[in-house]
Amino acid sequence: MEMKMGMRLGMSQRLVMTPRLQQALKLLQMPTLELQQVLKQEILQNPLLEEVDDIIDAPEEEEEKEKEKEEAASSDDKEEWDDFYDTAWNSGGNAEVEEREDFVERVPVAKQTFSDYLSSQLRLSTEDEMILEIGRYIIGSLDDSGYLTTSVEDIARTFGVEESLVEDALRLIQTFDPPGVGARELRESLLIQLRMKDLEDSLASTIVRDYFDEFKQKKYLDLSKKLKISLKEVQAQASVIGSLNPKPGLDIFAESPHYVIPDLVVERVGEKFVIFLNDRNVPRLRISQSYKDELQKDSGISTETRDFIQGRLKNAKWLIQTIEQRRRTMIKVMQSIVEEQKEFFEKGTVALKPLTLQQVASKIDMHESTVSRVTTNKYVQTPKGVFELKFFFSSSLGTQSGDEVSAKSAKVSIQAIIAGENTKKPLSDQKIADILEESGLIIARRTVAKYREQLGILPARHRKEY
Image (cartoon, rainbow, N blue to C red; front, side, top):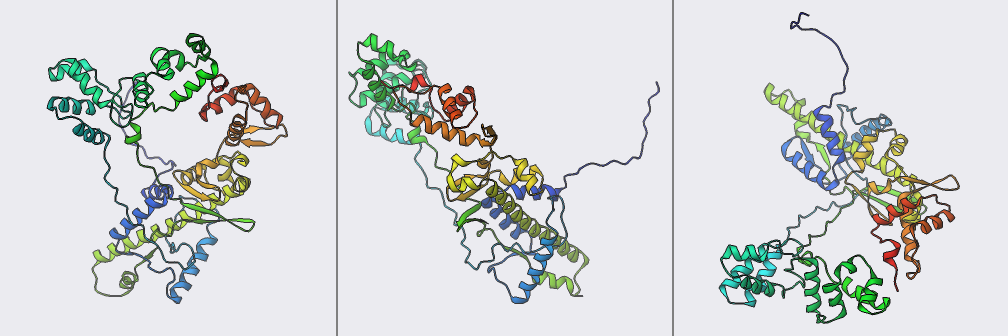
């Protein structure tokens, strides 16, 4: 078979992700706070873009903008994110007259690290140089939970000293705050905490020291026989042990809380729910009039300068149009969610209905991937609290009436049933499934077990109290 190289001309169709489309999708997926920073950067890079200080402009400019918005809205009913036009309109935001508040960047306060916190206690506890040196090494060998990750033998070998000296340094660190720090295992940490509570000779210490395996497996009946005490007393001591901290280092090392700025706000006005974007701090953009006038003049600007201005003008118009399109898309998606989940906004999570991205996409005549981008990493402030948009989407469970309920709603019901059970006779997963079935919800025992584990609730045998 003869093989040879050649060229052939052919035609084919394929979907091309243009740079502009890629940027439009990125802008759509951005949270409001991130979008704010991107637009401020664009203002610095594009001289034809300028930020509107006041929402209300001159009357003649306002009439022109209203006309542009009406023309844009008439062609937007079935607009997709890959259909862009060359004309642009101002992303003026809400029509209300209000002074825009600028976010002031909060400079993080310097925090004392876990290592610094322990080292400061070490310096105040001894003047022995060798103990200080070994103690600093031990502190540097603690993990985030406060446990020692290096053996005493290795530390002694590193410094060329007796193991007893390392033990002295370690025992000193084990007296520091937080209680339980410097332990080599969980049992040792719990014993340290009990000792610092003056419970070293208590029954709880005996259980941790001599019967820790039985305690971890909640074999309370075996503990009752071995210790010759009642089951009620065993459970009382288990409560004492349960109040201790298994990861003492995290009390100091815990990360700062993550603050969320909602992208959307849903408020109840009378019998209706009103939706608006929380974008008052996002820069409002417009085209610089001075550059537009310069292009319209027959002045002696060079061709290179004219081409530069025209290119920047085109980019500026496209960005303004894309931001406005993003706003309308987010409002559409949130409006559809509110319509589908109206009972949630009135009654709470127990009334949450099953909902999929495809349902919302079909309702607003958009692609499912567009809805997914709108709901990713975005939050909404509602009368019931602040929620991620993904929260409103969940799988469904059938009911005897033929309707469907949300899996999140089923979890709330399971949690409520367990909260109201008799702790001396806790309900099994099958019994919970039977109770839910009596209320009309069809759910299998294994599904109850899965949801219970996701809620962090123990099985019935471990929830029993004596």
